[in-house]
Length: 299
Image (cartoon, rainbow, N blue to C red; front, top):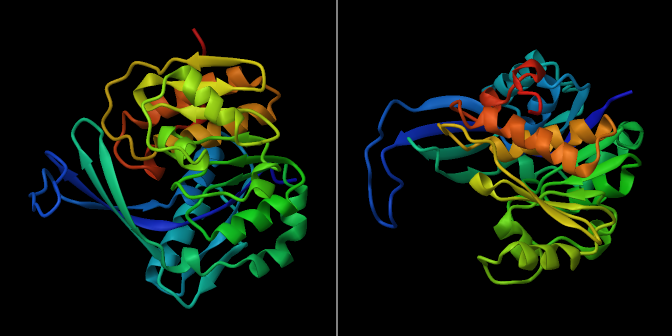
């Protein structure tokens, strides 16, 4: 049985190191040579879960091009099953990642094959999705694909609603664990971008109608775990950040990993925070995901 099926995006990331992020209309010179790496939130989460020792299958699409060949080889080498990644008559997705020395990043994505993927492509994968212990999703594919994958899933459903966009209430009602950041939470709740404190974030989380907890990632401030009757803050691990690009993806994969082991949601969030903390100390997204032995045990 597959532990985790990831339904989501696969991209080629072109990472450009900068001294500072450009303002609108500004051109800045790179701080070092650019590098080409594997990416896409779906592929990042699949590789992160595989590195933690999970049996992982990827569902998505790449182009009929050299980039698609390269990406499939890259994630297959990490142990991710790629038989359910389709080849599309559109180019493989590309992401331009601008990252500063302190780990701050801005990302622009050309979706390509990721947005070609359609709900009908999931019909032959009904057994795969239904038998998986967990289905892990993001929002770099069409909303209808996310909704259909959630409908077909019979195990744990974990949704990382990134990038921010509305999610149908019927889909949210079938989500077991929702993992937004502050901005994504506000967008889902129909609220303006907010600096709300813990109580405000918890109120927004409870308004969404998920059938399980909401774990709000707060970057350097840690993560807020919200259930129907409790809320608690999981502090971030203190590390020297190099690149925060893949931290959220590692967090989601590690959260699902811990939940499959039977961890309580607060324990799972602590494990995910420790895994994400390792990621930010390394350059890249997919390449920075830690293996299980590299994640510190609880103090």
